[in-house]
Length: 130
Image (cartoon, rainbow, N blue to C red; front, side):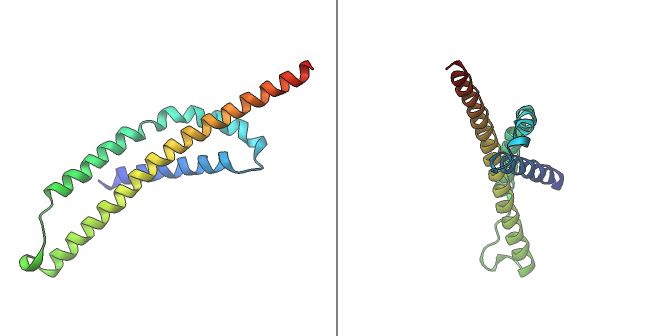
């Protein structure tokens, strides 16, 4: 079960790097190529959304079927194992939230940058007419 978390982590990392590169000032020569690459990658990265929902359901199922360890009913080793399991679930939920947030940011920033480029081209055409 660890492989899907690695894949999700890499996808979130790639999304974060693309958002960072799109928003950094001073990268105008690279921006046009980066926009083309990012727009082509948005559709494949959309598969992150159902994948995250599947992993979220997996976390919920594990939470619901987890044996409770409260009070004197369990040994210290079982209590530690229970706490580790809760920590992993919380970490994985944060990873899911980060992946979804970075996808949304990447989509929004890419659309805004494309729209700004279109408006700049329109301004240049209007200036050249005058």
